[in-house]
Image (cartoon, rainbow, N blue to C red):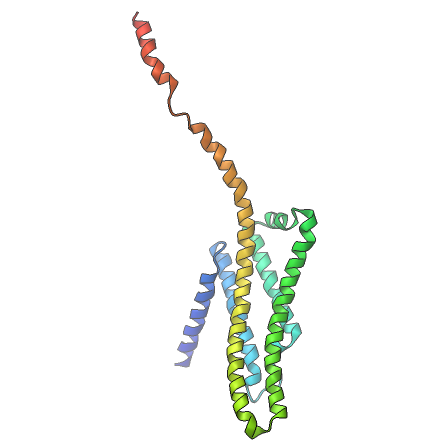
Length: 219
């Protein structure tokens, strides 16, 4: 029935996000996949609310406060999880190590939050407002075809924007973990090289001198 179809759709989308998360241990991957899953479906269902005839309010995603809050929540969970995976001290050292780049790195996190919220707000707000404009300005008999076409486009646009928003959360997490992990793996690789070097002397001198010692002893 419908419940099984919805459960199958939810399982497919959750598995898709789980495969997209490639960095960190299993508990961190599950957390980020769950975050992406929740963000995707919240944005999708919240934007579709204005399509229900009984609901006269605008979609929550057409409110900039909601989209900015979603962006803030996303970046907070992503950065906290990344810090837990690589270590808080190591994560902070990565962002603060060149002290002159600290403002740039902090501003980068803030800009990611703002751009996530503004991009989602701009696209979905314009789509919802255009439907209201068509309803107000075009007579009902004439507005049927434009409304049907734009509603279909609006539904598809909501799916695309919800998926992009969730995938960006996954991408930010992967970049945050892999960038710090790559920097941390360089010294470790360098420290392994000198440990291999002392084992290189292959021809052993004592084994070659043993016959001489035996012959001397025989004399």
